[in-house]
Length: 185
Image 1: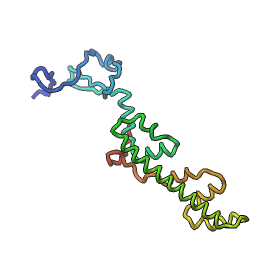
Image 2: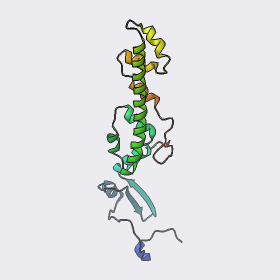
Image 3: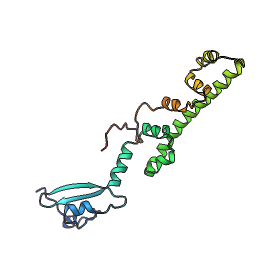
């Protein structure tokens, strides 16, 4: 009725209660060592009946990672040469299956592009005379839809970065099917 907080013991509450600490100042609470698998602390100020949340740095870091986890962040990690295992290192187990599925799909699409380019390259070289010109090659390459990769291959350059650009997810769908657009600080 008054809006004041009372300890659960006053009501003989049979259920679980939050762990209480004996910090007497906000400074003591801020200086408290992080607790494993904890979000942080809630400091209750009796004089004003206010509560202040203090979030642990490791919780904030994990929250940021999870909130920014989406198809595009998985794509960026792989495109930049990262491994799936490297991406999973910082994530809770509950996200591993989703990340692996997204990564498997992206890698399969890039590999399919590599296979198509390599097949087209071999096919073109098989039908061209040994003294073919770059123009001859170009005429055949443009018929395939993979000219960018075929010319890179012809010139000894890596065309996979272009394939990674082509498989970039259109949206930012996260593990729960939600698009995350929140800018997490």
